[in-house]
Every structure is written in C-alpha cells, then in structure tokens.
Image 1 (cartoon, one colour):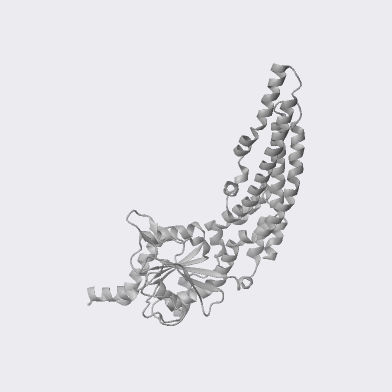
Image 2 (cartoon, one colour):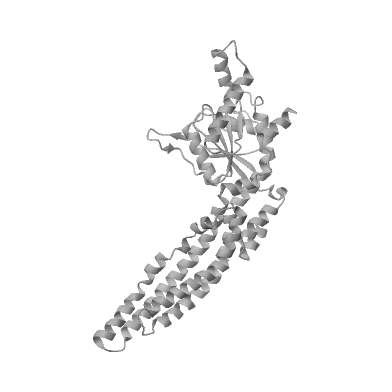
Length: 400
C-alpha cells in the first residue's frame, strides 16, 4: 500500500497501476480474497461450501443446509490462506421479473455461480452483473448426480455417464458463450459425492488462479488505498482557497459591469488546471493511463464530474447582479456605481469560495472515479489473466 501511495502522491496514476502489474505474484499472497457463492435458492450453495471446507453439515463451523440462507455468512477456508467463502442468499426472480434477495456484489472479489438445473435468467443476470464489475467467476453445476440418475432411468439401454456429463457441460458452456463470457470455466459436481466428477479439478483450478485473483482483488481496492493521499492533497489546496476568493472579491470591486464574471471564470479554470496537475488528472497523465488500461481516454474523461462547466457558469451568474446594479447607477443615476461595486465584490467572494471548494472536492472524487473506471474495464481485467492456465489445460494435467 505504501509503494502504491507514493506514485499517487507524485501525481502519476499510470505509474501506480504499472507498479502493481510489475510486482511478482507472491507479493499478493497475504491479500484477503472474498469469494461469493451465488445462485438460486435450493441450488446447493451451502452444501457446496461445506465440501470446499471439508466439513460435514453437522460439524461446528459448517454452513447450515436444508434452510434458506437469509443473510451473507463468511467461512474462512482451512487450507487456502486469506480466503473467505461467502454463502449468499438465493437470487430469484419475482412474478414481475425483478430480482429478490439481492446483495451488493461489489464487496466481493471473486464469484462461484452454483446452479442445479438448466441455465436460467437469474444466472444470466449474475453473469452480466459480475462482468460489469470486470471480475471473474466459475460456473458450477451442482447436483449433477441427480441428472445422471434421471438420464439412467430415461435411457437404461443406451446410457453412458461420460456422454451425459459431456452434454451437460457443453450446454452450460454454450449458454455462457451466448452471454459473451470469454473462456468460461464450468465444473460439474456432486454435493453427495464431492470427490467424483469435476470437484478435484475445481480445487486445482482455484489453487492455480489464487495469486492472480488476489492481485485482482488488490487492484480493485486501489481507489480506497488512495483516499489518505487524496485527503492530504485536499488539505494542501484548501489553504489557498480563501486567499483566491478574497482576491477575486477585490477584482469584483472594479467598476466595470461583467468584469468580475470574466475574471472569476478565468481564475476558476486556472485553479481547476492546478488541481488536475496536483491530483494527476491532467490530459497528459490520463492519456498515458488510457494506454495502460487499453481504453479510450474519452471513457476516463466521462468519469470526471469536475469537467462540466455548466454548473459553474450557472453559479457565476450571481456576478451579473452586481453588473446590473452598476448599469442602473451609470444610466439612471449618472453616478459612480458604489453600490454595484460592493454587490459585485461581496457576491464574488462568497460564490468563488463555494465554487473553488466544490471544484477541489470534485477533482478529489474524480481521482477515485477514474481509477475505478479504469479498473472496471473487462479488457484490463482480461489482460491480468493472460498467463493463467485455463481449466481445460488443468484437466489435461490431472488426466496425465
């Protein structure tokens, strides 16, 4: 965290991400990985977690089975360090088509979708939600032994375990490919006999992916790690705001209608540019960052609320009150616009103070927004996993 905060302090977001990418995987071994086990009610999530923990349902510390899970519960894995398996409430659709029992998935780093029947809308929704966050998942078809038993009864003469399992896996993979999943990881398991079918392959794949997943979890937490540095930068810039507001108020006293508006806008844009440089959001840095995460720079700009000028212009229209009073004093009273100058100067002080504070707050928030937007990109996430062996390769290794 300290090594990451240093380039953030030195105003280089791209260097911060590049630094993390360059670290060997063992640097991330102690990162906490929260694995969410999700699916529809009754899919066997709790039993699957117990098999992952190596515990029977009646043992202390095991997930409760046979009842519907009402809230998320975490279970530390006994042999995988810093890995917590979360049993989430079942996700299902109501009669109106909306999802019920929803839990915010942003707090989790990796997902295992558990299903016990054909690919359904609820699974597609989970896939879309996970992919929108740029995170990874496994798809587990639980209770596959029940499918085998049903097929054996329907076709007793030409029954073949391998053909049925292959058909089920291909059906799952085709459904995931239709949802634009690249290299879907599908595992067929039996909760009653966990060491049959693909359960050993799933454990082997998870162990192989673990350090990559922990690196991804660390990278997605970078916006939170940057918060202390951003607060220190905000405190540094806040000390300059009152002096700038008083300066703009003095300029607003000039007996020229509209002068305070023009000068205030000029100083505001100059202050915003300084904030961009201090927080590392100037166009040069963002261009480099866009190349690092392989995204158009316009996508990063779109995450920045501070780039919008319309709210600033609307607030600065208060300066025109002083300008109108000046014009009235010039034209109707034929005198020096004392009242108009004071109105213009005072309104400029208060408006400038508020707008500069708002600009500083928006730029600080934009720094985290830009990091989050960059890290949510699926292309950048896929880039982190280009060297991770697929489940197909691991299956070959296990077979050998």
